Picture 1: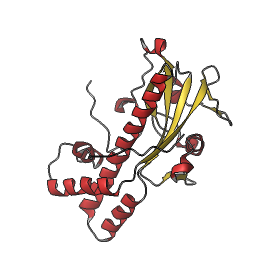
Picture 2 (picture 1 turned 60 degrees about the vertical axis):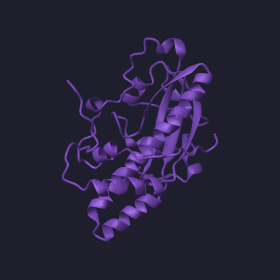
Picture 3 (picture 1 turned 30 degrees about the vertical axis):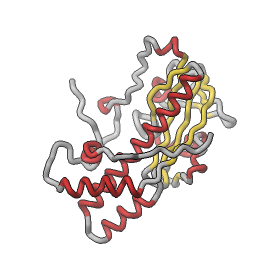
Picture 4 (picture 1 turned 90 degrees about the vertical axis):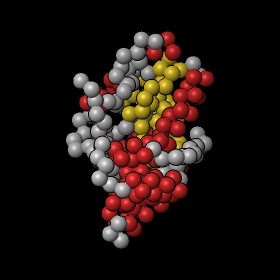
Length: 228
């Protein structure tokens, strides 16, 4: 699959505030927030790549050249009904995180925090752009794309990160994974997207939306408010 280069024409201010853990608080400089988002837009070099594989429902296996059997309940449930999967990897590169390190070393902590949060917003926006392209390709093949689901969320152990990165051919966009299963560069994402026959999606109820109240990740500053 050719490398896709999403265009980020803006960085969402509200999402950046959320990722910075600010929520509805206003005790920060709006000027710094705008500066951080502008810097993120300039420093980010978004790239995405993905591969599509047959998915065997009975064995919960991604039928890649080296088949990957899924064992975590969260991802298995998420892919219920899928006949294929798209395995994706997205990054915004390393310049932004280098600038964050520079800002902290110069004691510019607030701007560093906001720029780091803006980088998270940027990679999420890049992921959304890649998902949009995947969805269009799936539609042309008579399939409907579900939502992305990443290692480390919803009870899917991060230990599978190297295998998912390999299936996505993440090395093609200079992505790697550490011994502790963290992606390098940090502002990167891998995910699996289920592709469903159209007739199965008409009444689909497989909890694709990985809402915050279903995620077991503790201490997440980016957790969205949910209504009960």
